[in-house]
Length: 412
Picture 1 (cartoon, rainbow, N blue to C red):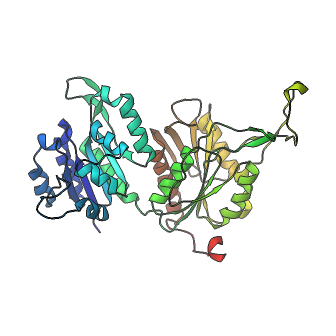
Picture 2 (picture 1 turned 90 degrees about the vertical axis):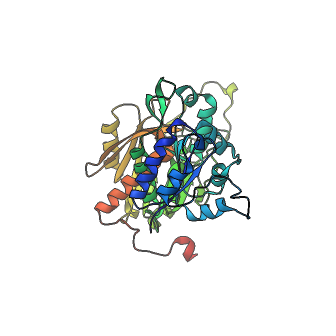
Picture 3 (picture 1 turned 90 degrees about the horizontal axis):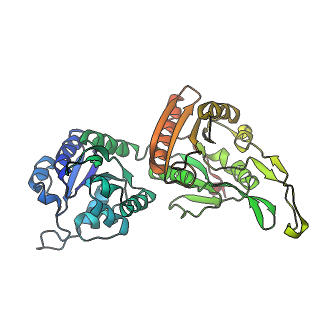
């Protein structure tokens, strides 16, 4: 079946390049429905898109005005992807704030499949605090971005803000279309967030993990068709929809959940930041008046390595948060833990890793697999991790789920 794409075009000088995006999608046998904003029509005529797509162009939310129309609802049922190129600061702001005053913004609120934005604007606009916040909001909600690139801008300035080239946008759109459903029928287990190890009844030892990477893995796995169970430590993140969620607090809690859940999964992404050291807990509150205290820390259990006796043919992804000798330490951990892949990042950098919106990682595999994923949103990083996960399974001849068995919930 041919993929179906809604191509939104906003008002900017880059609008003329959207014609090449349309042509690239059609050449790959996609069905494309163009939607032009009022601003876009100042730069390029709707007829151009109608001829190339062989479909009428949507312009006004109320259709022709001569008959009732809820085309944005019907279109949401039809489409596999919403691609907006160029995406202006104005339209991104409307998307982020849930405003609906034209066909494109109204349609965005009805669309439930992947969204890809190709921003285009002046550098000063791209770096403005309001635009940055709108990007963060959209990224948190699962919207993907391609670009912008650096280069000559319409003002004559040179800098970031130029819309990415059409062929790059088409390639990224096709990657998202191809990813839909490639994890279908698989049962994935994802861990996220920190553990809290009690010192006394009111204090604990923890770490800076926000859980964002694990939550992104759970959400992208879900969006690619998997049945996902998320084991989450304490975080401030909203729970992902359509994902089974189980909570833990201590490393021992997490270990208990994994012993129960791991045998029935097809893959595990161990993104939780588990305590390396466990304090000797006091049953009574420690009081300052009692003077200085020495806190005894005992090495914690390597939870992932301990799952070896429960392993069938699951594909296991480990994580390593390092500050030096990233690859050397990651490879050693991968071997010790018996993982198929390990994801390592530099937590010494403030712009990636713990509690950051973006991440930059290296994915290493037992077979010599190595991929550097440059700085991007954690949702995009999560997609790259699942791509590598599928590559491992394909190499083993396990591109689909393991032999079906009744789950614990089904047996109960």
